[in-house]
Length: 234
Ligand SMILES: O=C([O-])CC(=O)C(=O)O
Ligand SMILES: [Mg+2]
Image (cartoon, rainbow, N blue to C red; front, side, top):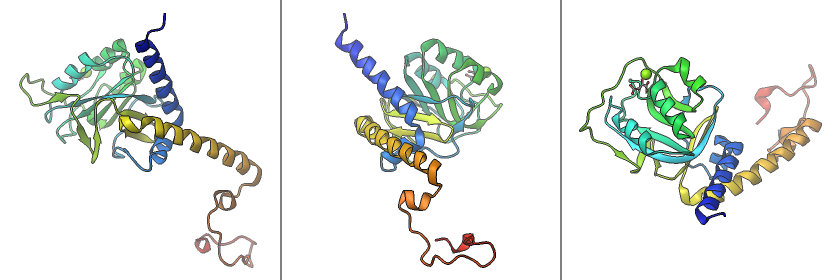
């Protein structure tokens, strides 16, 4: 028997699957320019992409206990998104946490700081996005200030629990929960339009006419080779 909760979970899994297919850049464009995290946050686990619901974590600079606590609360389809007090120079996530994330079925991890144990993270298979790599460890102070599922801000983007988080080779984007369905619809339309343009480009090769871009005002070929010099193209 299918319960309402089970069908809700299935619907959300379909949403996340669609978001992963669209990718970070298309979702960002379709949203009208929302949620692009700083370009310094890059894929650490090369080739692994993520789409999931944010479980937000904030913790003090140089300490990762709140990430361990966040992992203990997260489950299948969740993405841990961590703000670490603006201090990037420490390995806030590593092999042990990634094994824990894999056991719990997490969709991935985004850290506004560095991570470590990089040689093993890709093999473990949980997508990790971070500022870079750092061998330095973190403290795990029991009384450090932090929270799970409170709003956090990364590079001026506010992320709340349940927001859609998508990461791929282009970077990471976060979309507010109440905009997800609209953005996925617009993203799908955009992807379909682009597929038509790609097909047409394979025939003609002109991005100017196919994308409706302004052409050069005077279509006068150069004397030398019949090609218009690049600097004359507006
Ligand atoms: O020290 C930590 O908690 C981070 C780490 O290296 C690991 O998870 O392996
Ligand atoms: Mg480690």
